Image (cartoon, rainbow, N blue to C red; front, top):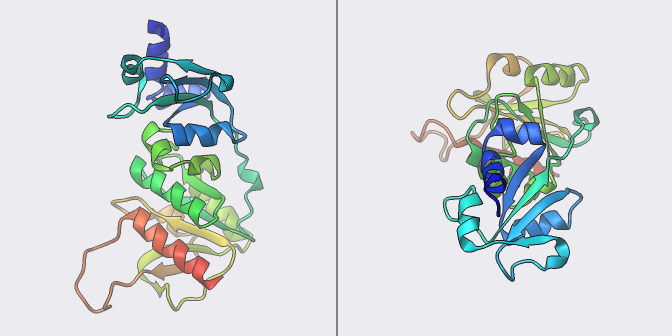
Length: 246
């Protein structure tokens, strides 16, 4: 590999470079195998000898080169440069299907886990505020375990988008300490599930558009427990209960 190639790949750790170049990094044989079988376009593929057949366009690199270009603490056996897909928020229909909305979820691991959860529970779209973590951050991509291929992630002015959903009479759910017990509350088949920032929850502008306030109770309900759940765990509990009803 040339020095400029290595520098370019390493520069993709930065969001500004990914956005300017329109590409992101994916690592590992399983994830890249899924990407090659998907509609996403793999622009370049680097792999150790014997990992991928040359027929898929793999460029063979040494262990030392892979360690230099990897975005992970421990280098994998392959790395792909993938074109960022274009998603159309206007096509998202929250009136007939569930959509997850994320308000300022900034931890890459949490975002990656939520994308993976959405894939597991058959939720095809996640709408993020502009100040959420970047879904094409290498840590997020790896945490999704391939779900980033199947789940559409959109970035927008979240409060404004929720206001439009509210005008269209789409149910908008959010979790609050004064909300209704999720296990006895009526839940719809379609709608938006809003999850908030790791430290401060859902902000006031987004909260103003929420029409269904929910609460995940501890067990037993009168026992003193931790103050809150991790946002990814709370998302799993909520999605599971919605799907159980259906």
